[in-house]
Length: 374
Image (cartoon, rainbow, N blue to C red):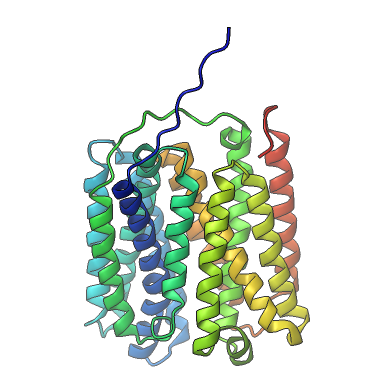
């Protein structure tokens, strides 16, 4: 006698819109303000004092880790929307403060609020998503939200906007996230996903993979944006920015489609190969920079979609806190530190990142239980 499989929950259209909006809004805020527009504001106000950037970013990173831990510690089905709204309120406060900040101490305060708010919102959202939308379309919802965010932030007029305009857009993103998150309620009873991806060894392997990917991405983007020739070839002009925006959206949606088929390893592998190849071309083949830029965009969208999907599918806020604290904040800070004051990607970084990613993917495969390919 065979047992019937449980029907897959299909969320209503308004729930899908709310979830996509929440994911996109949180990503837009993070992309356009803490790691980009805020740094513009600091550099403009403090006269390009490079020595102050790293300490300010350190404060932001530590606050982000703190926010992540707090979100995991106090997460509950009853209080998650309140925590999500609180985090977005803190994010909005940081963006608003940056509009009037002029002194070094004020920018440290903005960094603390931006990190704390981002940590609270990202972990809380990851803990809310699966219970609100189920498993059937979780990957596509996250992929669409991620892709829309990256596409929006790369549009001409947004990417090259002033620090003031980007802070204002960050405020709008926080408001949109609040509107979307307020409609996310638990509709599905969560069962822990089977397989080794969420075992102790599987989690360790994935954290290492994400750490290497975020570190490599952060280093590459920092060098691209601070090297005139690289930026000219990959991130300058309305046509190029529009192409990057479209590629981001298409790649993230494709990644979401693949993740709904439980192709975690394949999705991560394709994203890693694309990102590593892009970085190698930037390092070794200056005549192929245009193609390298597109490969970079594809790789970033693939792994960024996975960065939300992997902890969200577990339904465990503690796992989200671990991934975002170690791989997200730690990897970003490490990548920027390695790239600071450089004009090209360190060859050693490519080798180490590639080796860590490969070993991590081999390790997560080794702990898989027998079953369908993932």
